[in-house]
Structures are given as C-alpha cells and as structure tokens.
Image (tube, rainbow, N blue to C red):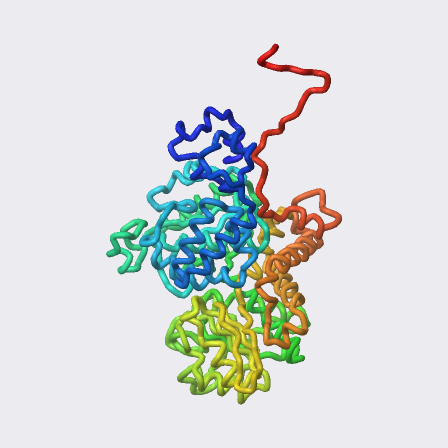
Length: 573
C-alpha cells in the first residue's frame, strides 16, 4: 500500500499536505536515490547523503552493541521494525543467534509483562468480546488485503507467565517476526491478533497502564461464539486456506479448539504441535548419539498440560511407525504434575486428554525424585513452567540410571527452565544430552571440554511448516506433518554438531533449516494428497526458494520509457 501511495501524483504526496511527514514513514530512510527523492517530492527532507543498506545496518548494529539491557534492545528493535522493515529483518537475520532471544523468548516475555508501560505504537489487530458481531468489519480495517497467515492469542497462558490479557500481543508479533526472518514469509502477509475477553490477573486489573478490558475473563458461551465468529470472518475475508496459528491459549481451550477446528480450518496450535515436533526432533537426534531406537526409551514428563501431551502423542506416533502398537507406546510414557504421578485412582480428576497416559501406580511416589528412581526413565522432559524442579538430586539420579541421560528443560522463559545447562553437564560430567526451551551459554567443564546446549526452540519448526502450508494450499494440517518436520530437523544436524553436544542445528543456520523443512513438507503433502494448490510444482526445491522474501530495497521509481518514433517536448510542442 505504501508503494502504491509513492506512485501516486507528487502533489498528493507532498509532506505539507499529509498528517504525518512523508519522510517519517520512509521504508528505507536515507537509501532513497537522488532521482527517487526528486520524483517523490522528498528532496531536502532527508540529509544529502545517499546511504547504502550496509551503512544503515552498521549503524543499527553499533547502536545495539551500546545497549546492555535486553528490554531496551527489544524496544529499539521494535522501533526499527516500525520505521524500516527491511533493515530490521536484515539485521535480525544476520545476527539471529544474538537477537532471537530479544525479539522472542525470553525477552518477549518480559516485554509482555511490561507491554502497557513500554507501549509506543499499536501492532496487530485487537478484537474484544464487546466487538462480537462485528469482527468481519474489524478485519476490513486492517490495511493489508492479502493475508496468508494469522497468529492469534487470547493471552491466558503467555509462556510460563500466566494470564497477561492483551499484554500478550507481544507473542503473535514475535512469532510472525520469525515467520519472516526464519522462513522468508512476506511480512505483509502476516497478521497478529489478540482476542480480549478480560483477564483474571488482579495485578493487571489494578494497573492504570493496562490496555485491555478491565473485567474478569469471560468464560461463558459468548467466548466460544466469539472465537467461532473470528474463525469464520478470517476465512471469509482471506480465504479457506488461510493459516491460523493458535498461541498461548489456556490448556483446556487449546485442546478444545484444536479438536473443534482442525478438520474445518487450516489451523494448528504451536504450544501443542510445534513444541511436540521440536522435542521429538531432539529425541531423534539423541537416538543417533546413543544408538538406541526410540522404542527402547522410557520418558517421564514434568508437567501434564498441552505441551507434555502434544509431545507424548507425537512420540507415540513415532514409535508406532516402527511397528509398536499404540498401547505399547503409551506405556513408555509417564507424567508427573502438581498433584503427583498420573496414575489410576488418584484423588485429583484426570483431564480426558490425559487418559491415554494414566497408568497403574508403580508404588509409593511422593516426589519427582521418587518418580525418577521408581520409573527409571531414559529421558526426562520438563514442560511445567515451574522453575528449577530438576534438582541436583534428580540430575544425579538420571546420571546413575543412564550412561547418556536425556534431560530436556523446555519451559520458558529462562527463569522457568527446570534446570540450567551448567547443572546438567556438570553433575553428569558431560554425559547428558541436554536441551532447553530458552538459550543457555556454552558450558566448559573442569577438564576443558566445551558443550553447546541445544535450544529446543519451536522456531525450528513453525516457520518452515507455515511456509510449506501456505505454498501448497493445505486445508487441514495433520499431526503427520509435524512428525515429518521433526524427522527433517533431526536429519539436518551434522555428526560434528552432535559431538559438540548440540541436538539441533545452530540458530545461525535457521533460514536454510526452515527452507529445507518447507521443501520436505511440500513434497510430503503433495505425496499424501493434502495439497490443494495446482499445478503441482515439478521442482519443489526451486519452487520454495523462489518465494522466499529478501531484504533488498525495492526501487520507488515509476516505469519511465519513450515511445518509439514519438518525440514530445511540452515546452516546445
């Protein structure tokens, strides 16, 4: 839309006739050429120097280096995204390992808790329960008409931080930043949405800077009706194959909506399916390191919510692929939540989603350490968001039970992780296979060995899957797509990286990882008859790569040319 405006008549674009100065909305700042400045009517509104994007990126990076506070960096980065989108993505992609923890977890969690206090300019679409009956007209207010991907939250369970209401908008914004940075999905095709039905967070309800409805969370039928209306409005506006990613809904609603909508819309829940895929990829990589097939592993989860159940169900699918029955695979998986081990006959009610993993009691289990010593797992996976519950004793027990214990502390943000990388490697003397949800620095042991912790970040999965789904016209996303994605991710880990302690490829390679995943998933969905975009591309690798968005500046010059044999001089003729 901005480019269209730029090509309108120069008089209509003159900054004195606009509500905001034209140059303040500039998509490339001082990189406009002299001819562009003259034709667009902005000559003199920028300093005389015509800068390259290289110089702009250098200034951007130097400014970031002078900042030490992660939240300050977040605010600066988001400001650059508003002013110069292509420059923002160039710098983010060039230093993705350093900056992903700023634009996404863990810093985005801090930014969400402070959202009303650091607010500069609205991003995304805000839909409240008071807008019920008018969602389609609200979507019409969004300036982009060719949206291909929507990330939506209701803010009830933001990372491990709980109910943040509309402050949760930072999550869809951050996720879609990674759609573009990691997979090259065009930013104008992405729409972040927060649905505001209130909040049960008393602190926010007393916060004068809170930006949502000052009411308790509506849990009536009106809430379900609102979500139904939202889903119908999105496909009515943007098409049946529009990807709708659910993010950070409460556990009960997350599973309910996934079951309700997965066969009707092109949708997935990243907390359930994306987390499952990246965790399974880590286990498949660990399988390579240990030389033990996944069917011989016994897995104990700390947490029994949407992440744990998503991972468990995908592990069961992977085991069944090797010939194991579903019942046999489910017997390999145990869960421990805030009430204790998930066993038959316990006092607390079991959620219907958990029933497949409720087993006979193995004995007297009073703590997670007791569970480890009784069940003797080969892998423990933490997704409870309750902090350092993989205690030194738990890690010691895992080291005593297994030559190569698998320890995944996947809760976000960093202070919610079940243990640190240093504790895991030090207590097991470097024998463990460790992964975390948030980043940890490399660990050097007393003998000089250095281990690089694997970060089981969903960003390895959802951008590549999203790109493949958008390009192939998938209408319904099967769990088998996430199984395929997990296999593809584990295969991209080199033997050398595995020796370094990594269970995932370096984040610096994530663009290539995501593109290769998209290629594999596109091949898979066409082979399985899930794709609806025809004609089917013959060379799927070239097809995917040809669509990837890049950060070079566009020319704002109109298409100027002469007519053959025609000369016209307005001053003379």
